[in-house]
Length: 625
Image (tube, rainbow, N blue to C red; front, side, top):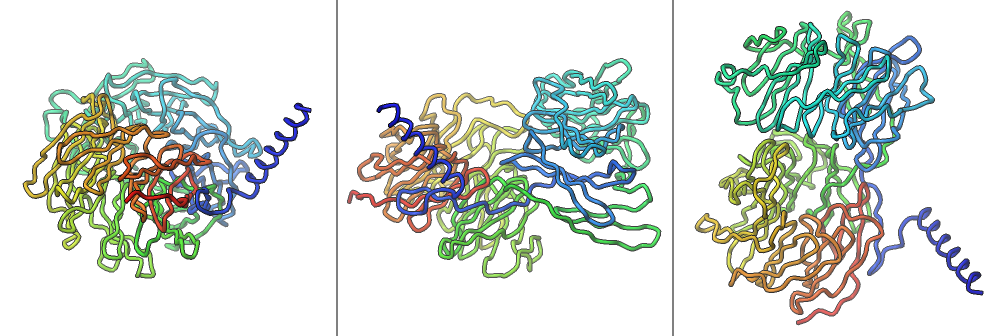
């Protein structure tokens, strides 16, 4: 009897699972999670090359990433636009892309540093995993073909050089090119067969590798470093092969031609090689779903379009915008979307040139969007019917440029006193110490900027406490890409906008590395570290209560609903905190991972889970008065 009952229960559970898998999440309602679908399905275009079509002709190969899925390759006929899509078995994306000497197409992934191969002569085999040339590496950044027929690639995070021999299938880890740097970011093979690699970002370097001896060394002698810009102050050295066949190195304002191992300073480098077909026609431009072929012999251009199928673009941030609509940004590609709860409709508004929007805030029925890299500030007006990104006055969104020194990833953006906007950021690559910027919406420019407001740390969360008039914030020990933290503990701090000085700083949670979210209401300040919510008294500058959370706090995902409750997201779900009772009064575990937030509209909270937008309407809760 018990066995029969258990079988029946298991069968019911299986049927319920199948029903949800086919028809989606439960219908919306108080206390129920609801999937609102996938807002963007464009995929991130990483590059385009010309290669063999496997039948004696040529094809264009478009390389797309999907952070929430697997990368894919689109083979396109340059004369007709006819396209065939090939999905990879592994890897969300690939920076490295090249047509190999054997006629195959090779990709090099991030999130695994795998070599992938597509054989145009055997398209039914699809994209295959060749292997991982180095056990320590996560990224293959670029490929180039050596005079020895091998494919070379530069890596992260140990700044290595690796190789693959298409003839034998042998892969080789050729070792670190720099003792401390993390990025070997660019490479090019010169006329003599030597491989040149650009290193960064803390101490830019230029390294040459000789395949004959398998030895490498820096080409930046003390004399070169002492001459105009070649210093130890940080940055990447970039290397590339130009139309004259030579390799050139660039660092700051310096341009050097590499003649074997001799560096010759030049005013400018020749153009980069154009993307050409064997009959001389050029691919003058390309984008997601389209390209233009220019014929120099006739002076005419032909535009083509092609189709592909993306599974969905990863949502990076969600926020509230004008008319109580939910806005969000996807990551690589940066697409801005809007969801209107009144009409239950979603719209992909358009693209911007950054990697992703890190923070957003409404201002007088318009929306500020600040993106990586460079913490570039933009203003979108939903009253205008078009999306036309640019810097001109008639553009929408209109871009105002970077926030200022020390800003690369603008993690936090809040309204402060006097209607000013405060932005907290992570610093540029190779640098420690982010910044706190003050943006004036009336002038649309930064009017104040404070670097190293927390020494050698990033600013990742902010809140304005109106009773004290202070801006409270949390730091993170992390610095810009390619750096290692020098501070052991993140700090919680207070900044006085009147005196323009920091008035408080403390490691209120020992050994914490990040204060992921901060919010102020009812004369209190709340901040979160991992699975802990801290109630902080701005009068005594002390933590008065620590509340365990049912999961780790999601960044910039702490706010107040219309009932006056404090609402937060963890990686596992939603929690509600009664500020008057000083206790958690509701938690809900989401059926999917919670990757990002954060928007509260009409007593529901919105968040991103991979490529999907989700909503959780709050159930009725008694509020302490």
